[in-house]
Length: 373
Ligand SMILES: *Cc1c(COP(=O)(O)O)cnc(C)c1O
Image (cartoon, rainbow, N blue to C red; front, side, top):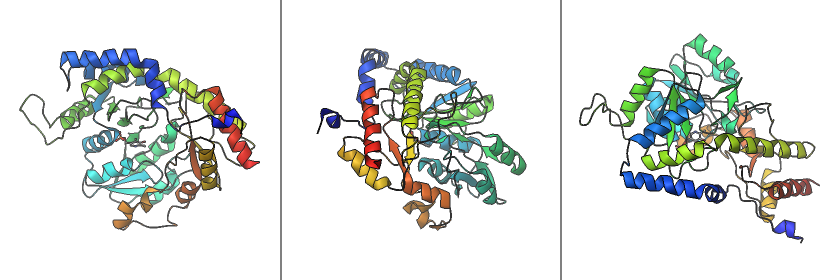
């Protein structure tokens, strides 16, 4: 074995990112501790303004997670019991869970194998008299072209709520995801492109009424202390996370640029391998939250990479309609959404983050080519 084979490529390396920013982050956390403003206050307001202006949205409302962002966006849209909401079958569980948690029913659509996005024709087939909304997911960091979704939504009078939990800074036709004016939900879970040091999220909108309602709902329906105008919840963004996010936001474009550069390199090196790399769209359409390849020998490749010190993930191994939770609720089983089901057996997420070194990228490419050869 040569030394290159001893190189480790963890699937995610949050320590490397922290090391680069430690003095600034530590100072920001100390500032919050000394201010004793732990919930609400200037740190949260500053981050909300920073994030709204970064995205190009009029308002950003900080919340406690991406899941609560989705739940509150659904509630602001008056989605509840008796309503159906279209959700792609290949996404993180929370997209559907939020729909269930507001009392509505997620209806799963198939996906497009080239972009991994929700497939609009499949969505149209699922529409009933109860369908009220559709949640396109900008999966893996690739901005979805929402033109067809918008046409579908206009024809059937559906609300569009965007799930941008993986797509901070991703743009379509020059406009960042979240700037469309529609309710757009972000997660700042630590592993996301913009990650807090705990749970956090945000909803962006250009509508003053929606932003005000979101602020009410996240804080016990309370416009002022001990006044409660509606039943809300506790889904606030805390100040420590907000202060950390304000610092990291300044690095986001640079991190995304590096992810794109790494992704372009890996995709071209893997173009003629039996592994199918993801498309690398021009411009800022993809921020490569995940770099997902396809191969019929997925599990064997995964084991081989692990033996070579390379971490991988599967996003996601079970399409949502086949998860235990939704099978118990009587959802259609295997065979009902063939593209999503086939992808689930073939996808593999390779290490992808700004801090990847040239050696780590080369090692990953070499290992895949060696496995293939
Ligand atoms: C991470 C994620 C969520 C949920 O966000 P949390 O902050 O973990 O609650 C929702 N949708 C997608 C697509 C995600 O990747």
